[in-house]
Image 1: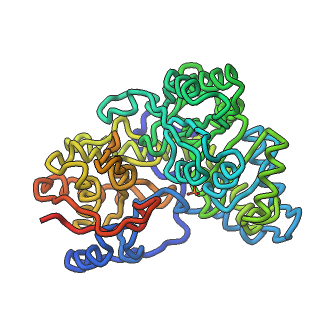
Image 2: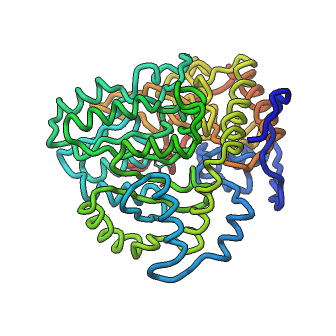
Length: 462
Ligand SMILES: *Cc1c(COP(=O)(O)O)cnc(C)c1O
């Protein structure tokens, strides 16, 4: 790592070889576009978005080496060289015996829970990501979040707010019965919990509970490299270890890994299910053949596997991870300096505006985070995503049950935007915050039975 202590500026550790123009729109155009989209930014055409912070998933810029890998990909149906390269890389990092490629993370979840889920089963996790919860529930099982108390308070500054609440985990196992728990999951970093990291100690303690009850531990490892870098920066004893060594230790406590390569493998599509248990892996591969493809491509092209293998080389580079974590922190720190409430401390892949404090006049059942999300688009053409009452709110016996956190996520695509793009974002968020009293609540005019946030439509409440 070449960084001199007398230099403070963190620069992008790459230069730009290809550019993609972005389109500017007027306020009046955005008013119409937003209305046509039913006040749901998911339904806006991407070409009408100036800065797209909807997600960091599948939006990474690939390196020249990854693009070169696309040409070099081996498209053989069975036994592709690109599969073996990807398998070797995933095995080096995770140490897992069986590496099963899938077209994305949720395909790995679907396969796993089709086999181990089902009615009467209960799956604990620090915080289930939305597709994970949906796949657990779709199988008939129940998904339970065991987030530690600090993680529920956006204003508390702590190092590892993504941690599992170990006592709640054990209580959950005892409450529902060991025989009904097929696996324990742990999500690193904790995406829905604010991109907050999980400590090595917490992973170790989760492992100890799993050992006590004879349960397998599956790591939802979408952001394993970012998590590893937080451990390096924050957890005693890890300063001198490489991100690869830290990642290897994290995975050593797990029996399996579900992965969206669209995150920390720096590609636009891909994923895996990695398992140590051979019998379970056989069942998963059989289902994979029905739903995804042959076990050496799993719904991907050979070139995709090649790009994943190369992306996994690059993701653990310390200069990359330093830039990644520091540039996200830059956005968070600037917003905090302006008095804008965000979930603290800044997470790895995103900054989350705390809508309850940003917009205290709108009650949670009128979707304050969705209203802020709409305003960001209207005022600056920025697309963010609501992670609050639209995504996780639910009706129970006719009453609205609000989630603990009401957030607007500004996810940062990997290697895509420069510091001046981020300075623009800061200016727009400040503008929306300055006029926060004018923001209005929304009501649903359409919702799907599952994962409603993707397709819901809204209107303003007068
Ligand atoms: C993205 C994500 C998933 C699902 O992966 P897809 O590739 O989008 O299907 C699962 N868990 C977490 C934590 C994620 O961030």
